[in-house]
Image (tube, rainbow, N blue to C red; front, side):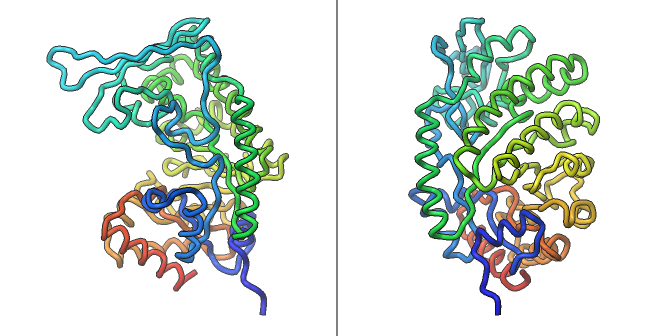
Length: 395
């Protein structure tokens, strides 16, 4: 009788499209549980106690207070020496919300942004540079013209030596912990066109991609060079899996020809860099991926993270498996918000069975709610239990 695999062995088997001892279940993000834990170590242990697979994620999560990269997990985003910022609040007659203004004064010019301070704005008087809260509340985005790119370079700087040293110290601790627990070490996040939403606004970016493609190419090239330097540091720390966020890179935003032109070059380069370092490459894309699957195969991604049969536009589990099965691992399969947080226990159990039936045969599948479980109420907790129970029955 063969010994059961460790969580790390099981996850690697799935990532390599080999057949594990059973289908792993590893939450992409588990904010509800994370909020109960003192640190990353407790989060991993709590998941293992629940019977789940788990990963140690680097860099370790930093507090979101007064930082400029709330939705860009990874090394701190620091500005160049000489950059000065100014933030102020303005109350406009007849406007429902105050307006928060922020200016970035650089040697190459000033970048300005303004956002509505809505009732659910989480940062007080602070305005971060990289954060999803910016996108629907912005009145002005910092980057809209080619001449803004020189100033932007002062905000996208080389990783600071102190941050590199801190990451490597974290990595040594993470590897010791991961080896003791038999779990995977994941690093990230990389970023590409998601940053267009934060810097330009999605509508502005998509119109520019059509009307001024050279501007978008220059901007994405600047982001890619900055991202690569950060990625090299994380890979040098010895992670098993590097992850790039691409929530806003799917065909909901980019047509396939636009995707090939604007996204594929940097993505392919990053996959090659990860593989040269001996790491797997994961790509978070939760909607609009179906027209892009063949391109993703050509790029050489190891795992497509975020297969969502409910909120993923056009997502078809069976067709995904027919296209990717045995050639690229997929991670997800069950919706997090509608199914896990708001559904019935039977809906959860049915979703788990359908996901494993469609994607789990022969390896290359990691089960997870997509992309997060945030709610920590009685219904959500009950449904998480149903999710785990159903997985154990059919895995």
